[in-house]
Image (cartoon, rainbow, N blue to C red; front, side, top):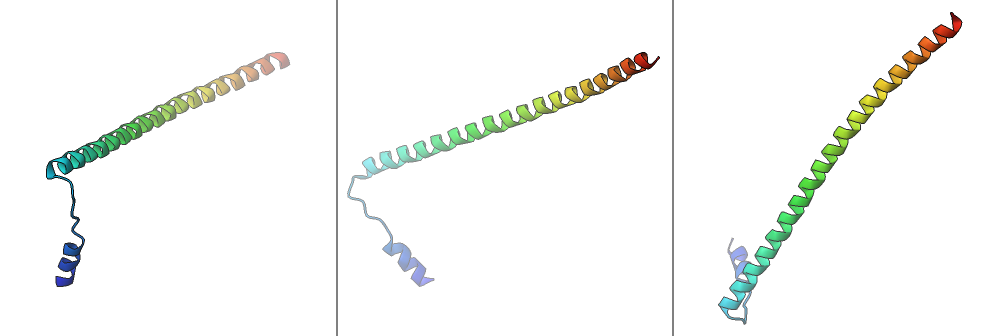
Length: 85
């Protein structure tokens, strides 16, 4: 436990700049990181919504295609029946 405390103390960074300047720098750095994270999160949400919309549209068109194929088969059967009659 003492070794860990010593390692932490040894790693302590000493800055030469004034505290006020460092605070402004670190605050700006943190704000940029948060802004970048929010933007990535927003882009991810938009992408997920787009995927969901595309999947919904695909399912709609797939169902419509299936229905129209059934109607086409039925029409062909009726036409065939009329030809043989």
